[in-house]
Image 1: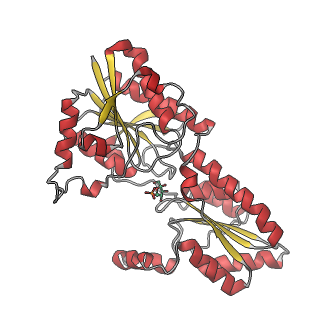
Image 2: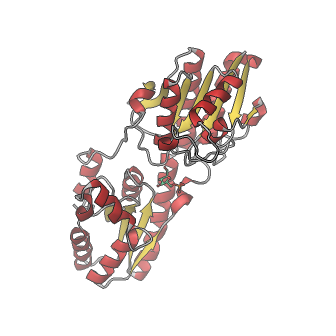
Image 3: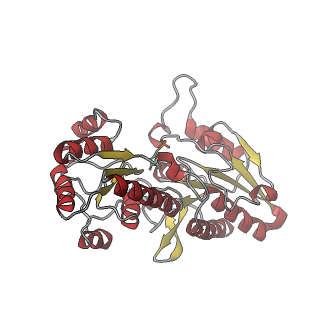
Length: 359
Ligand code: F6P
């Protein structure tokens, strides 16, 4: 009997259930009734607290299009994984290993983002058999050209920009749409381009507010009555970006606005006199049904993860590289962030059509 645990960890996104479905279907297809799949509840928390349930084949039916995760998820920061809880004296790593052993697992399948992959690698180094899949709307996992959830979030953010376009045009206003992404600007970049934003601000390219204002003033001079900005949560001004690490953190924490977009809106309004509004779709971007691309890619990721288990090839994430699904070592993935390369062709072509990045 083969025993496989599966968990979803970190922020949820579209495609988690279709990824779970795919790996389960491929395992049942190969092992028939000679496989037991254990759903670990709420991510690593369930592994620490030994909360799980033995799944049945019917649990994986009808979930291809369902948003969220049937297993639940939680954030368990990697930096605290080795820290013994003072109140409970719980050694999280030891407890996770205990649950794995108690269930006599042959492998643990982990679906998660960057933090999740650091812990997945830690567990792999601790001797557990781990296979993972890259999940996040941020698309910032190293070793894969795309993460699942990303394209669905791009669709949603693009739709927000489309809707904002009509109201911005009617009122002749400046609108900022703030997209998720504290460290990486992929979502803002893709949705900004797809939605026809005039300005795109992402963490990888620190902005100069004067350049942003110049762009809006030029548009007004050219007869455009409105402007749209796509701004990432983690967009950062040049002044703050060049501060030493600690001072930079303080400056971000002490921002006198609900988020960076409100500061930018205030600065634009002051300089141009044009009414400026902010729209923050927030977690809306992670919700709802996965789009066709995410259903497609998670099906491929899940099938590939099952093949790794069947071949007993552990310690790998399934990545998409140049159109092919390949195993990428967890050691390589853990601790790296795939940001938008500032010299990328995407940025170049956006600039060629006149989109400002505020640089
Ligand atoms: O990592 C995915 C993500 O949606 C980021 O884009 C966002 O900054 C963050 O999670 C929000 O986290 P939470 O759901 O914990 O508020």
